[in-house]
Image 1 (cartoon, rainbow, N blue to C red):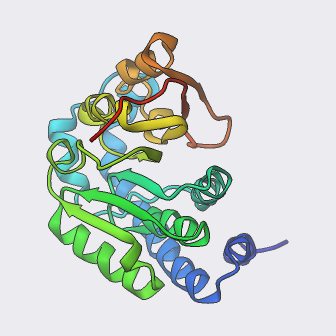
Image 2 (cartoon, rainbow, N blue to C red):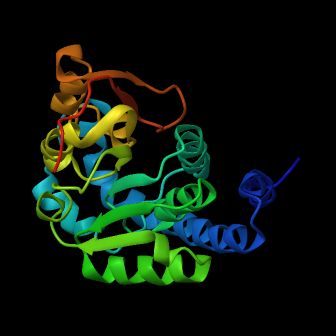
Length: 240
């Protein structure tokens, strides 16, 4: 039977980039070791999670600031493939953390012929590590990494957006999507992985994207923690 490391290495061959695969193997290994700390800090929330009740993010968020919080590599490969299919060149990532998912997004943009991933991270130390990881992967020039509150740093993009990875915490996930929605081109995709793990906390988000009058067609993907997959159906407003 193939080991997890061997299986991951085999799946990363999809990227057809030995340097990139080597960096990602290392980062996914670090993130996997970090999972024990993540579980330890969430264990007190398990009763509420099992009962699908809301969590106290004002208290919980500060406990997670030093952790990777990187999701399953298969879901990030899905993002890479989605961006390739969309021929995405203008991407927004909300909640960059250590930059693991950013690497997949930037690789897809590079392989599509170039463009920009506008990435946002509120914790300066995490943003610095993300920059270093992107530098190691040779993708830093494709990423506009902005440090601070995403409600202030990425809500007025310069043009139509092809893809949004919404990995930000629940209190701002919907408000920032609502601000970005007019800038999404028809057929653009937004993916919110955390909505699968914390459905109660993302209840308003889910109601909004699943209401066709708001300009999206949306459903939950069946993959483990892949999250809510929403397609923009309306023409975005014109921008100067």
